[in-house]
Length: 141
Image 1 (cartoon, helix red, strand yellow):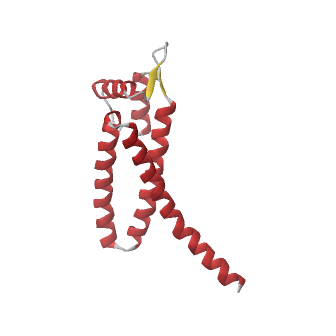
Image 2 (cartoon, rainbow, N blue to C red; image 1 turned 135 degrees about the vertical axis):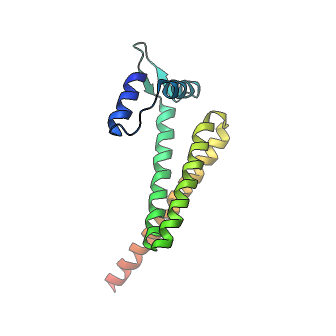
């Protein structure tokens, strides 16, 4: 998409609640270009690079981790809701900081970050798997 198309899509997707200005979008596109996360095509449209897609996958994985943790916290009740709100604020701050500093991160730092995310995903999957294993064992007996 072009920068204008990105702005128009953001407005449409948020039903007009967010109207990003060119002064916001174009510097962000510049950073994406500088970091190798996007490229500008000959027709003035921007495309996401393979590196950019990898970052998106990492962020989606992190989002999945957060949602699973929030589900657990929200089951606790009102106190869980307060804790969840605080957790969301902290995660947004961390995510924003990481996103804005990806270009400054070394390849080794990015690799460590990726390994951290993968290890956290495995931890989330282990309780589900062990719970299924216990259930299957009980069903067999």
